[in-house]
Amino acid sequence: MDLQSFFNMGGYAEFVWSAYGLTAVVLVANWVAARRREAEELASARRRTQQLKESRT
Amino acid sequence: MWTWLHKFASPPHAYRLLGRLAPWFGWPALALILLATWWGLVRAPADYQQGDAFRILYVHAPSAWMSMFIYVVMAVAAGIGLIWRIKLAHAAAAASAAVGASFTFLALATGSIWGKPMWGTWWVWDARLTSELILLFLYFGYMALRASFDDPQRADRASAVLAIVGVINVPIIHYSVEWWTTLHQPASVTKLDKPSIAIEMLYPLFIMIVGFQLYYGWLLCRRLRAEILRRERNATWLKEGL
Image (cartoon, rainbow over all chains, first blue to last red; front, side, top):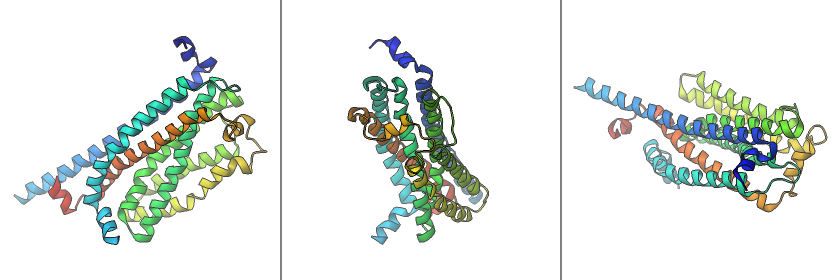
């Protein structure tokens, strides 16, 4: 199979590629969102711990 | 059994366990999704009726499956949280909502992209599409309801009731094509639902479903950890452990 016909998808290129592209976007966005959320919560938990330590001293 | 369960459900233990579990979901998920994508786009032969457009099936059907699966997980977790008052179960339900909503959106969007060349329209108000859209609104409603409470415990209880009531929509989505086939469901889709599809065309579909399932597992690990951190902000284990 040559590359040209692969990208052409039998004339359905815009539909097939937009569906797969959208899927990729949603999957990656989920990854970024989950990672970011965890990092933010961890940072804010660390901040609180730091504040508590400082208020004790 | 109960002591084991309590130990498992205790926030510090769960937090550490989820961190260790995550890569066991993440890497296989990535491998399987890539394999299924290659198989679905390159190796699988074009459909004799739909040509290459049928390849959308490999992202559409797993998304639709996940949209329902995650909702059931969310409702069951919410139910466990309500009955046995396990906070971790509520946290798991809360951590699932956004992921479930994103898969529901994906199912609707890829279905629409598939519908355009096959049915000639982006959208019809048939039973399957409408009930899937209602599922998306259930996820949004669940998230909005949670966000409307400052107190996490009240948010847990109220949103759990919504999640459990809304689960009635899942069998409606599933059976909608059988109950209302005569109305709108075009033949091209019912044909794919029947076993008239060749078995080798199903392999990438199953691989993608397992891949999505594992990916949800990874996302749940990460989001549940974030959820635990937020809920346990005043706990001593957290202050000492960081």
